[in-house]
Length: 278
Image (cartoon, rainbow, N blue to C red; front, top):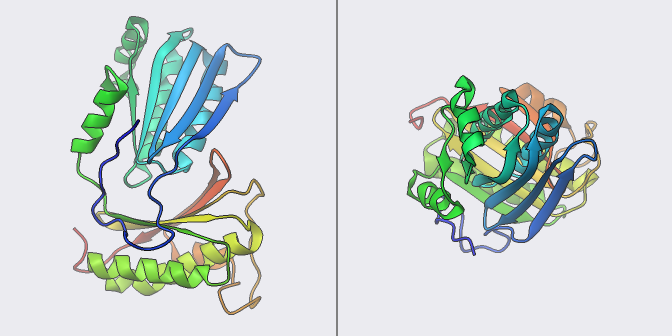
């Protein structure tokens, strides 16, 4: 059983708050390669078990599995490579690429654990991989994560109802007030309204909303459980948004969408000017 740390700044004591997702398991396998990936998620920590031979084709399978896992926004991704062997040494660069992707999600980390000697040798001989965190066990990786500083963030799970955009606005308003970021509150509320409205209208599933702060940036993200591709809304469809993702594009410094293990996530990055910036 995984024991996550308690995150300061996470909203508590209200209905619908995301405390953690347990038992989500996904498999990634390509019959043309001898590499298999399984992902299990519990209490905000994803464990990716990699088995078989890592060659160039297997690296593509692993890259896709890690991307979907990271897009699901866990606090930590632990890649267990105990049953993995090296087929092509250059393929270990997939871990460096995944670590860079993890760094783009505030509050998300990626570490390796239980590597065999040939995997250790390949990592040490690849410059891009020398900065990767490597642990001897899953337990050690969890302990190191618990001891590291937490990134301020608020999360809430919403039902796909007309009231959801308003609930999301109140969440980001509370976050901005807590972090002293009044100057970005109105923009953040508008951007998050559009993202949540889009998810309610087109996905129709439970929605996980996250608001994170990392130095001079704020990231808002909306995750749904629908495999449908992202749709851009039109103007004036209702009073809870409807202006679509053109608003998100215009007001954010960057935004994007990616698949998760059970749906997709849409995110936007906002600059945070003013005295509240650390």
